[in-house]
Image 1 (cartoon, rainbow, N blue to C red):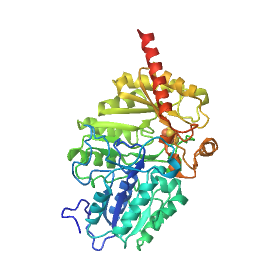
Image 2 (cartoon, rainbow, N blue to C red; image 1 turned 180 degrees about the vertical axis):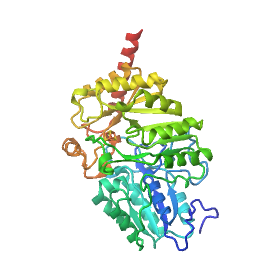
Image 3 (cartoon, helix red, strand yellow; image 1 turned 30 degrees about the vertical axis):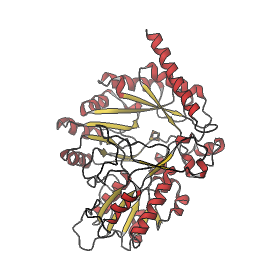
Image 4 (cartoon, rainbow, N blue to C red; image 1 turned 45 degrees about the vertical axis):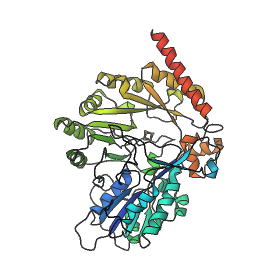
Length: 461
Ligand code: SF4
């Protein structure tokens, strides 16, 4: 029986006999998950491409509170927050991890109810995928979509589908797409799956996204570029997107204006390389925000490139309202870094420029990489010490092995987990640390950070 109030509705293209395309963002299956302004950006780009090509489109985001009710934990004032969760038994390969495994997001019955209310049924369903180790949610969403819409064709794309294509072929979709939809061969294959000839790709395909599917959003996203000019051996960026492209700032500004006018005050940047070539995209966008006197909060949960934190960029970011600043230091062992994105002088200068522009030390969090294959604990301690010496908070980020990256082979050699199963890419299990995750190990790290902090405070007294 269809619900009386539909939770998902069609965005009409106004065409007669349009292709109807439903996007699904599946649940997260993990040991932990927290909503840090999370949105399925790639899927929103895909829906935008279809919408501007004459299709009717709809979104079912199982990680959003699309079904109103008290079941969803209250979000913080800035839009971040917990997800509802359902405890699940651990998959066999993770059975020795001493943590609770859960499904995060909208309850399954509510998700099914929301899908069932979509009328008419879709012709084509795009299921996105994010972390490789969240694939159980992908398989489960495809199964549910198949049961509710047996006539629809299902296409699986996104990060997991791109990085683990062969594995993703077993998830039950009719087509698995690796790489961006705007690649002409992918665009043609997806339209062909739906039994139609592919129209020309719309302008700015893959660089424009549509956030209008969220009815009363607590936050929104800004994506001004795709890809990253660096090629760090532990990162998936270049595997997911070949090259670096920037959006037309007028389109980015239009998106910000539309969301602001409907009450959104928190915006998160989704770029991997936000600060690269700022004249093209970032400066016009920040100038617009400053000139229009928008009272908003900007967040940069993806690490910013410290080397590009010039005095001018820092001043503009501060004036425009950036409040969440995450910096990608990774390691302070500058002689032996595995990447080329930063040197010691750039690191110190970048932090100094942020402080000079008016950011406080409490605004900044610095990502430190831990658990890399072959990494010594003393390297991590040295990095933590360096960050704390500047009065800034370090945050340890455990390494997640990513297939196809230069570091993956080394990870396979060092890990005691079978990395051919994407479940074992999960950084929550510390895949390249001997013995994997343990609460004792976690406590040891917390105490080590605490000790360095106390030592620093004593020296300051
Ligand atoms: S700079 Fe950052 S986004 Fe770019 S490749 Fe390195 S880790 Fe990835």
